[in-house]
Length: 387
Ligand SMILES: C[S@@+](CC[C@H](N)C(=O)[O-])C[C@H]1O[C@@H](n2cnc3c(N)ncnc32)[C@H](O)[C@@H]1O
Image (tube, rainbow, N blue to C red; front, side, top):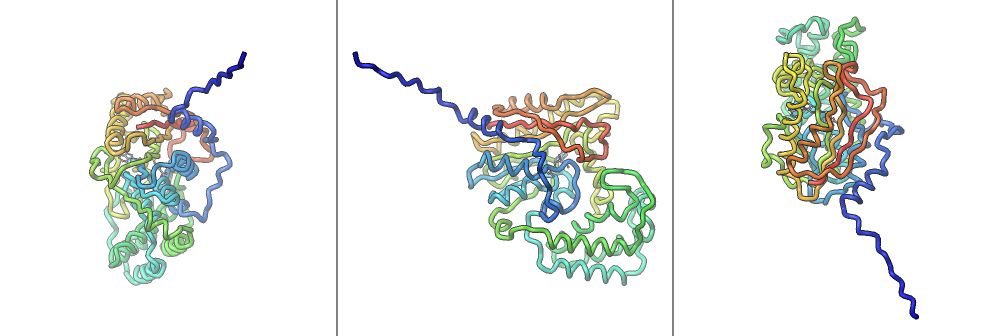
């Protein structure tokens, strides 16, 4: 009798399972990540920014079609946009914070070749300016010495007089990068006034040094031109699908969440000095602590509604089958740990997104925030959906 062999084929794995397997092989802690001080990511501090390895890995592993955009609806200082650009993708980012948007633009646009000379001219003109009226900034002389204020006020005027808008924008970002250093604020992560060894001259030295440092950071010019980034400085809830300049093939983001980081506070004096209104930013910022200490206790419900608004926008701009990756921690509110993944999962499901991967990652213990004791930031969730 002839022997018939029956081949039992394993059931075909669907795309979602393959994606989950691929993402499951990644060591999401990236514990050996070593931030390069020479990379453009190093320009300007920003709280709770991504380590570049996160968007880099997600873009590489999920490799969306080349013709589509990489989108970060909370782009902060532009880490996802820079990584998208390095991988050859055009991108789009939204952020409410004008300082985040300013830094994102500087990192993703070719720098004017003569901006270091322009910085030095501004310093020379500011030295000649003589005393100017100080800007009307609350508690100014608590946070800045009078001679530091005079130099900052003079630099601010000379920068405003720079004719070329691209150069002016870079010089504003350079000025922003030195504000905390020349203030009485202890450090970028500690919001307390201390006596520091700074003077009016320190402002000019720090400004010149920061411009030089920016000029020395490495970017590959052709990628900037071939893979442009669009940066939208708006409340995410005011952005219309028509504002997104194309089909989105991948979303990589880390949203703000209740009672954790306060982006407006972190950049408050930077915004005052550059002529923005930090209080307007505070009133619209998702998760700002003030909202949780004003007698309202609707943080979970509010967060769910806010994230549902974000997923509504994503559903409208993402291609079918495209992926969306959110990285975020939990909150500690009134001493209770609040699980932020649950409202996020609910919001995504409501708009037809299918969860394909869920994991946790440990956060480097050296990463700091203003309000470390309010937040639970030892671990974060990594969640990936398919549209
Ligand atoms: C976790 S940070 C993003 C950091 C970013 N991944 C990076 O690498 O720089 C969250 C961002 O959400 C922004 N944000 C808060 N509320 C917002 C709103 N209503 N609309 C748009 N952006 C908002 C904050 O300004 C902050 O930059």
